[in-house]
Figure 1: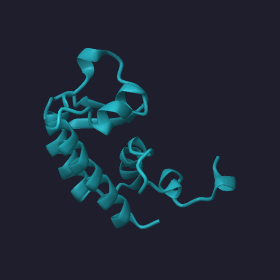
Figure 2 (figure 1 turned 90 degrees about the horizontal axis):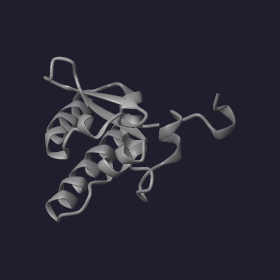
Figure 3 (figure 1 turned 90 degrees about the vertical axis):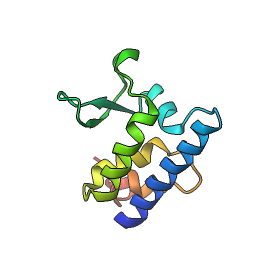
Figure 4 (figure 1 turned 135 degrees about the vertical axis):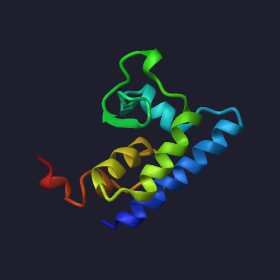
Length: 113
């Protein structure tokens, strides 16, 4: 698995979601959140965001896409944490450029535990 390819995929999808929002369409990241694939929440101090597996607990907890976009771009651009990148990439699993090995960190299907 190439971390830079994964990073580029996520950044490209965030850009695509920004265009979707401008066109009045639901960003795919927001759709993934509504389906419980991940949860993006405000940190306790409100200065940042937390990226967590699982569904958003309440509608009030949902962070508007425009608010999370800049913070996610910054995080994706600087993080070396492959788990964070894979969690975000998995939100875009239906995209034709998504690769199965990103979800499992390069391990084959038989190696998953």
